[in-house]
Image (tube, rainbow, N blue to C red; front, side):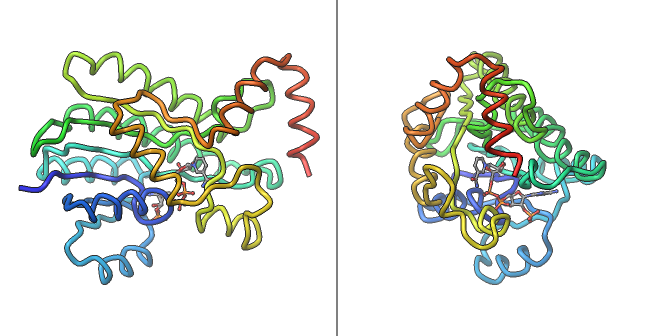
Length: 252
Ligand SMILES: NC(=O)c1ccc[n+]([C@@H]2O[C@H](COP(=O)([O-])OP(=O)(O)OC[C@H]3O[C@@H](n4cnc5c(N)ncnc54)[C@H](OP(=O)(O)O)[C@@H]3O)[C@@H](O)[C@H]2O)c1
């Protein structure tokens, strides 16, 4: 029997890169996404993967997804990689965008982790682990933080609560906070290139960082190192200054 991984938000970007990494190591792959186009393409490329459609913004679809996935348990790894982000400071979020932002980055994550905590289990020589993709943006504490950053901040702390709660069941919980990763989505949001983003890293490097933290049994992974140090430094500064600097940098 192969070990099983479920990646919610596995149809593109880091989630897909993590799925490929596991497929190359003979894991059975289950990925979730809402784009029919991506699902159709991936189903042709990876006919042996289980690729499931679900728009996680929709509570009913989420419940149906969890019922369906419960029939495929246990999973040894569940990764919450689904995310929805925009250049929030440049495009005012309307009501629908704010609702989508909260639904994907916070509400569906909460439901996903609640479900996953009950359905991960060590097997096939693999320990049980939950992973979530937060963001370096969620680690900087200052007034005037974006909805996205607040969601990622909540994710970071929720993961810490699950980590403590699941310790006795020997389920590891890894919270990931990366800086900019050169995914197609980040490029699309930046006119085709994200090269100007500070400390930009490749998807391959992001996967290597996540997997090395997971395999070492770490609780958190903050990378790249220069972004980690920058975040630590910024958090030492008075919040008022940080708010002022962020406004100048981001409100263009
Ligand atoms: N790229 C970066 O610089 C960066 C930095 C820090 C943190 N992150 C975080 O890392 C995660 C992945 O980012 P990425 O750049 O790899 O983005 P991405 O390529 O856009 O991947 C996002 C994934 O989430 C899924 N998703 C989005 N909305 C969904 C919905 N309503 N229902 C179901 N699935 C949905 C997408 O699938 P469908 O399109 O099929 O719905 C896709 O599989 C995100 O949580 C992001 O916030 C990214």
